Amino acid sequence: MRRVAIVGAGLAGLTAAQELRRLGYDGALVLVGAEPFRPYRRPPLSKEYLLTADDRHLTLADGDLDDLAATWLLGHAATGLDLPGRRVLRGTLPPVDFDGLVIATGAGARNLPDGGHLPGVMTLRSLDDARMLRARLADRPRVVIAGAGFLGSEIAATLRALDLPVTLVSPDPVPLHRPLGRQVGALVADLHRAHAVDLRLHRRVTAVTGDPTVRQVHLDDGTALPADLVVVAVGARPRVEWLRGSGLRLDDGVVVDGNGLAAPGVVAAGDVARWPQPALDGELLRVEHYSNAIDQGAHAARALLGYPGRFAPVPSFWGDLYGRKLRSVGLTGIRYDTHLVASEPGGRFLAEYHRDGGVVGAVTAGFTHSLAHYRDLIAKQMAAPVPAPTPFRAS
Amino acid sequence: MRIRVDMTRCQTHAQCVFAAPTVFTLDDNDELSYDAAPDDALRQAIEQAARACPERAIFLDGA
Image 1 (cartoon, rainbow over the protein chains, first blue to last red):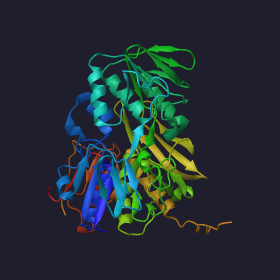
Image 2 (tube, one colour; image 1 turned 135 degrees about the horizontal axis):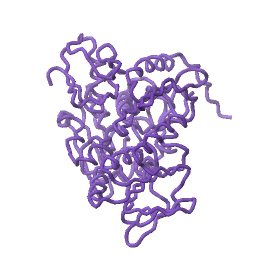
Image 3 (cartoon, rainbow over the protein chains, first blue to last red; image 1 turned 30 degrees about the horizontal axis):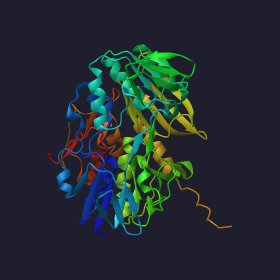
Image 4 (cartoon, chains in turn red, green; image 1 turned 180 degrees about the vertical axis):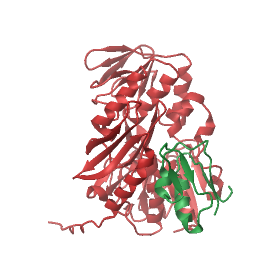
């Protein structure tokens, strides 16, 4: 392999590039990025960066990017993949030839079906988004946030730190319902309320209206919330448009096999990749966490160079809310049984998640030191021999 | 080998503890402590810890 193209210059793409070099790959390395920036840290965009606009929070690689000896083609997204011709297409720009390809185009923000393009309605995914959002905060807007996942919850906490009035709307019974489950999500709801967030649960945004800019957010119970700024944080969609018709299997992301391959010499990693998770009997998963972009980026590089090995990470995610550090390991959320092991009035808690009677994950605020124990336990379970797959037979 | 953690950056994500538990530990107050001169045999795990750190707060060999 002498010519590797990495499409997507985010954390997964960068990690793949670093791992390729670490393993001794000394051929050409081309990174194609839609944004005009080299890789940067996205998590601060909803936190420190929104508060301070200090670019230092975004520095990712501590100046070692030049050591990669890579060619950076930034500011233009890939527009297509010619798999038989081994070329990444870039509109009217010259294509990028490859013999090995890493797909790491990430995911883009979903928007509201109605009113999402009205001025004053924003999503937060990129540095440009964060700069636009921050520019609006000086006017002290009344803010409505649609979606109470990690992004919506963190933006709410950050804007409350700026003492802006915040309403948080979610169709779920609690914030962070899917990743944390009902019991732990209820603790997060308490946190929001304690910080004077107007929490509207079990409610959907049906429309956003105003002329020329947003004035009102309409909910499904008929409520009309006054708003000067609406932040839409209703999840993300994998960026696979450029791969349509390429012959790769696309199904809520680029589907890869147990070794990380989407096709011979083609791997995928990060928010865009969907792979069979061994701990869930090979169920296809797509994971948007920071730690997954790193683990899978490194694994994709190894797969590209022909190192065998299934991708079987122990997941981990985190969030920062009102000074509380939410930390996790393993599989968590509504799909599993929650056991609240500790819950203190000050907001410290530790919750276990069980599946078939065994611990598969844990989430905490204030008992992060306990997670090492859980990770050991979970890693041992996940490393346990799994039954051989039933051979596929065409009928 | 020598390692250093910029404690002003550490946000206790515990990713280093997961990657190299004999080098990095959290006490009961979730404060990080670490072995600044770990055995060279642990290099791969420590490199993994440095890479996994979301704050990029772990530095190897005097960097």
